[in-house]
Length: 397
Image 1 (cartoon, one colour):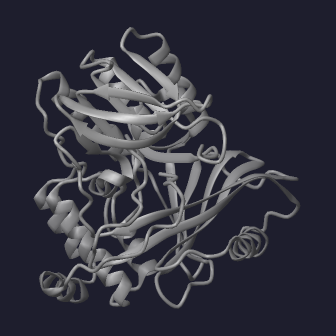
Image 2 (image 1 turned 45 degrees about the vertical axis):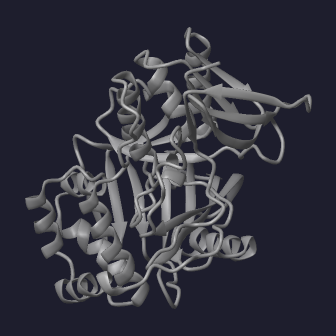
């Protein structure tokens, strides 16, 4: 019996296990799916920080400069120093954390399918099916479940950030390895929401090239492929290129209230626990902060899980989502103007929920005040409505 069982071996589950074992807060068993259809394909997660963390070994690439392209073709390049934009590939991250858990006295990874979780006296139990098919029951004082929710919580606004990306190799040097194109709005825009290209150079002739939309409904794979082909050929002008691998995902962007606790001893983490930032889709950095906070709480003997985001951040995101969904603000202009009018380091801290009230007030004044104020005033009177199950996918961020 471990003190803690973590369900799911993705970013949230492994991060939490890593933090708990790292400070000796408890013993941990991570239950992750065996090889097969339930095991996620390799993913990409991105975030920004100053570096020097214990996860640096898993960082595949980083960029000191960020670039935004407006629809008219003009570009803005910003330096968010001391922050850098970083990429982590899930295989490298899993390998690093698995090795650290194996080398510890309090952590282990169990390959099994988690079937059911229920409360029992003194904690909870997880019923699993290992690859040999024989039922296995794990008991623990606390269970942290990172599996995606089957149904999203009721919300006033429900959008999805959905994307498909190619890891491409070009015939000639086409990329600047020092600059990440965070949002390229030169792509055709959908009738509702917004779309942008996203380019993370890995070398002068290699990059992750993605097409992303914020809208109510994901596209078909064929539609993503067509949009990516147009972006690579007509907008980036890559010339001859080879697609080495592809990845695709869907991220909920919602002001729904994700439950952090489903029982006295059972908690939700990751996107299922509300770690995804509603207005941007970024998750990885919030997962790291949330994991540290949970590990500290366990170490101190507290049976509460702090929220992954503060109330002010969630309230501001609710306004942005509603304003985007109603068309009161122009999405490409809104995000481009945020980077043009706000120092890059401050804006990234804002997106991480690390700014002061005074800084947030200043950023708010740089947005379309009238539409945003109208949206803020109407939100308290809107009813939260149920939504269908989210499409399958996981955040790249």
